[in-house]
Image (cartoon, rainbow over all chains, first blue to last red; front, side, top):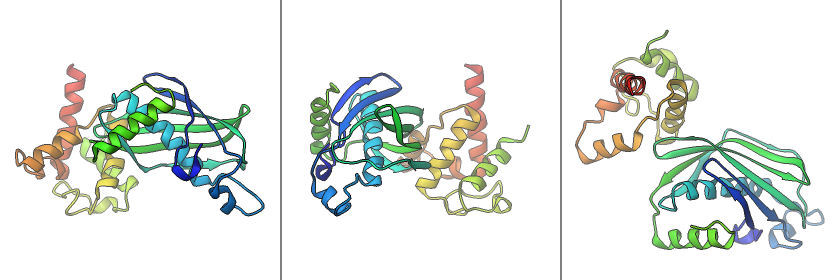
Length: 150
Length: 94
């Protein structure tokens, strides 16, 4: 994970038509952890949500053959069960719940050492044409970096 | 079984802040009920699930934006209900 660059996923372990499994390792140090919180570094809950959104996003990009971008537009229920500290290795999973016309819905979760850390139900994504070629190229490069061949 | 109109009206009332009794066959989903695009996607997701279909929102939007179809054809409640019934019938027939 590079928290300050919003690069949350380190490696895709597996992906198929309806699900993805990925890994993310929390850095030992980051400006984000310095601020959240001084003397008690924790990965912010919103970044755990972002991590699950990115896993879902990569699943959707793979399904769409990188022809469109997935933009997070909402989610139903988020549970943050425990703190996530520097150096932790996280397993991130996402599952397609529904693909509609121009939108998709996923469920996602993060575990650590086999135990539940957090989960989110019904993350909704708008599926839209890439608004800029640079974004399309960046997503392909990111996907390649984490082992998700475009 | 409740009509498609009643089921859709129930979904809209449950998904948004619109009171059920204000939703009438002649109501325009956007102009009269004040549903925005984000709420409309929630409603479409609920309709997709309830009826087991995939509402072709992107095609409808393209048709309206290009002038090929009036917005009322898809976004006035009684017409929306008809479109949903057609999608269900097409799925059953296919």
